[in-house]
Length: 83
Image 1 (cartoon, rainbow, N blue to C red):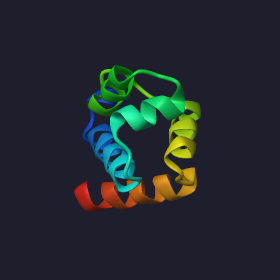
Image 2: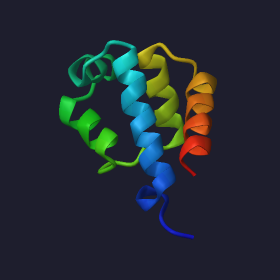
Image 3: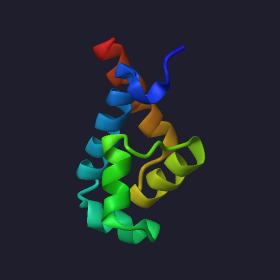
Image 4: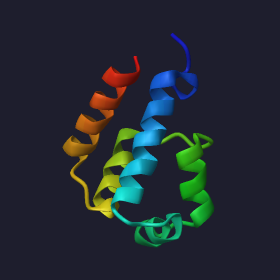
């Protein structure tokens, strides 16, 4: 099994993550402030330089005002459309 950070599915995950933030009308700076992080941290996460685990994804979703189940549903739809 390939490292998931290098798969097409992880690329889809990153696109959905960015799209979710943008649809929440948050900049990287806005999200960083909500997470008590830096803008560069958010950028690294969105570019795939820093991998998110499920607990961190849950915190991201909360900060964006999105239920994690809804995020996962969007991710699943995106994968079905791209795989």
